Image 1 (cartoon, helix red, strand yellow):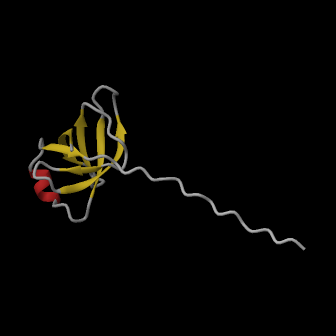
Image 2 (cartoon, one colour):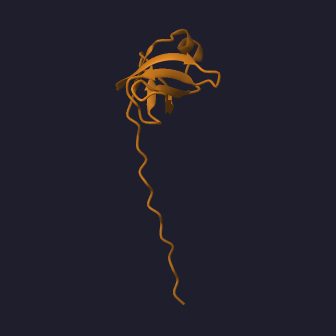
Image 3 (tube, helix red, strand yellow):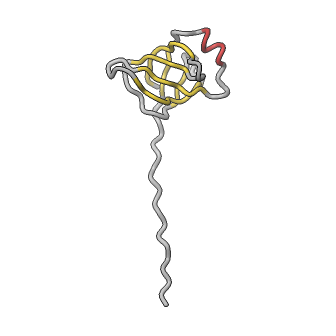
Length: 95
């Protein structure tokens, strides 16, 4: 796990906003300082040197404790890249 940044606040949309020094890959899993999964990276926006990150929280994440602990350190794991599927070729029947 790599250090992502610090949490700032929960937006009206229900997403957690964080500030980071690096740009994480979208879809990466985000953990709190206790190594509990709290969500996935959604959007990355703002300046390129210190971007803001919008994190879609999981339903199992405790929003009240996250909001109470603003400024908490967040960590990110590597996102699993989806392999492209091979398309099946249709069999052509000769007449």
